[in-house]
Length: 317
Ligand SMILES: Nc1ncnc2c1ncn2[C@@H]1O[C@H](COP(=O)(O)OP(=O)(O)O)[C@@H](O)[C@H]1O
Ligand SMILES: [Mg+2]
Image (cartoon, rainbow, N blue to C red; front, side):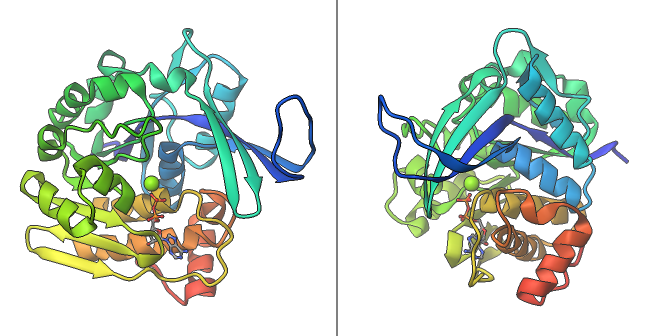
């Protein structure tokens, strides 16, 4: 028995949300936001917090600064039951922050990557990796050093005898520099969304992009497709599942991260790939019933209640 079910390896930042803004801000002017929230952000942070709420034993390897935002990240993860003993504090940069300006259904965001851009292979303790059964790496384009050393990091992680999942997330530079022929043979579960998969392969459709990556898959891939659901790709065949549609979406922030949390929590429990996909579809849907990426996952009970109330489902967790 390992000490942890899941080790989340990735970026950590805080989100500063400015809501209900009177119009678009203009250079040289000032306007009011009627609401402000400062909270744990980052895809990998949301993944870890929600996996822990779903009942997995989770630890985190990520870099924060020696500052108050770093403390906020640490406290927020701890409050969700995530082990913070493997967080890395650096003197060299401040904790990353994303400032989000929300208008109706649209938003503009600016990210200061800070500490998250510095974490490289030499910072990651192989002994910490070996304490987990499964490692999930996310946001490979957001973290400069991790991106530059991805093959080295993934090789080191796999050498510890763990299973590995990866969600690439969006590339702010839109270069989509991801050597899938070299990386995917080391990744047990590849978890991009539709846009990310077509961009990294340079193929126009999901079908063609899946055909392109298939020869390099170590085990399986699952492609997230928003309101269209998800596509599971395995050596035994592919499986398309429609989304559990939420007629009154609050917001879809973190839906993909919550999908990953449900899928991977089911996976470490030994569920079949199809059962993992169904759980991901449910956790993705439940994510959309409350504000932000973690709102619907305050506890396992809160998640169960939301799954029943909104979708009539009793999750098998
Ligand atoms: N409006 C929605 N209603 C129900 N489920 C949704 C909705 N939006 C997303 N999901 C679920 O969440 C999953 C991940 O969302 P998606 O937007 O594809 O990922 P990402 O956030 O990574 O772009 C989808 O595969 C789907 O199962
Ligand atoms: Mg995503």
